[in-house]
Image (cartoon, rainbow, N blue to C red; front, top):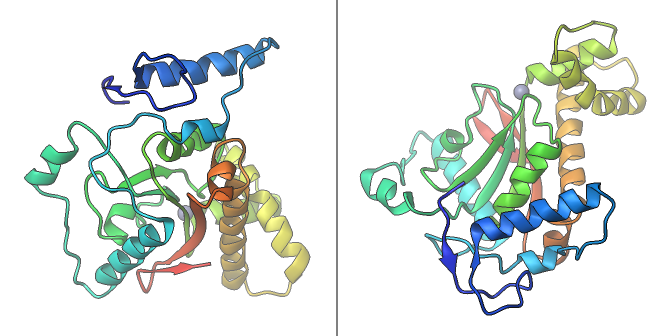
Length: 260
Ligand SMILES: [Zn+2]
């Protein structure tokens, strides 16, 4: 988190005339969760009231469609070998040192061949990136996404899976009976519903590589759908038209991002 900023109060979180600070916002959220866990009555903070949460912005907010265009334009530059590497210079370092306003959240696979800043030709402060093998979203990842949306003003959430994903492949193997050591089993378990769904709809006759790719796509689409419906914050922003959630697949051969 950044250092604490004092900003004018415009939020329903605090009806008093006192300024609301970032830390106070986070404390309020934490307090709400704790009280809910304790079964006590609290004033629930609705997602709508988070819209005006104080933040430090270093750029004008963009619409979800503008954010998507920025990403796709950046990937087109990368594909054509004409990446501009904007926002990777000393001026940008200074600009974002005291605040950030990433225009998009990328929930991508941790695979070393799919770094979002590179494949979308973006720089410092542009993307809020959360990465797990198999682009899985658990509560901690969701909390990170909610923070980027509610507090940093990101308007697009992209779930980015990719061709020949090792984590999805592990889930396919786990489905066929392979036991994985340590916590890799948990990873495979999280992706398993996507594999089961493809198996159910496609049967067993699909060629192995094609089957894996169907599972990759299904896993992306499931994560995208569950994120778009994730209450109380992301779903509210989606209903209000303030945020879009899209799924995309990165092609390792073509280095191109395809929207699903
Ligand atoms: Zn992967």
